Length: 113
Length: 114
Image (tube, chains in turn cyan, brown):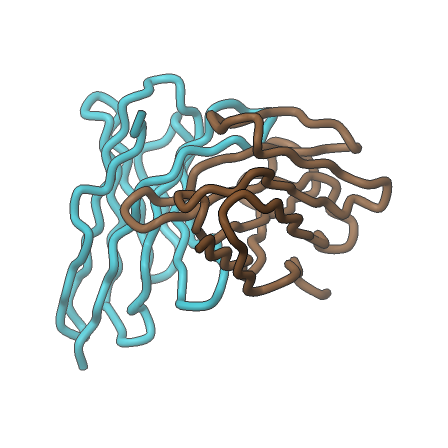
């Protein structure tokens, strides 16, 4: 069962504009959400996270928003840069004491110069 | 600090064979998790090991197994390979279970089953 969904397989934006990547989940027991970025031939790298008790977390150009009532989170990248072009995965953690996570299928972001 | 290493990086096997993949975590990390990545499915959790014990297991058949050694290195084994097992297998390490934000992934092993 796909408990974490990224419904947009791809997204293309112009350099300098905002990129918004979306993620929906079904399990209300998830307590922690993460975004990972993946370049070809490399493993995913951690980007930003948010606890279920918060609704926003910001780190430089990256901001993650969590809407628990809608079971929705989004990643905003402002301003977008060509180096941000990668596949972005949304992930949700099942429990605080293990690393069992559910991942979305990923969104390929292309930032055009 | 050296990152997570996985060997081999690429592997081609035939249906029915078995395969063993290896993962060396970051020094000091004691938790190792394994994921399978296939197109359109994202990453699917296989299992997590900590202190040589399997803590969690995902929804995969018994053909998928793993183990962890006293130095925290981990191996996963897939027996009786099927075409559908073709995927990128990723290993991730963290200091301990629950440290999801400090989970670092290796580059993966690309397994092709023919």
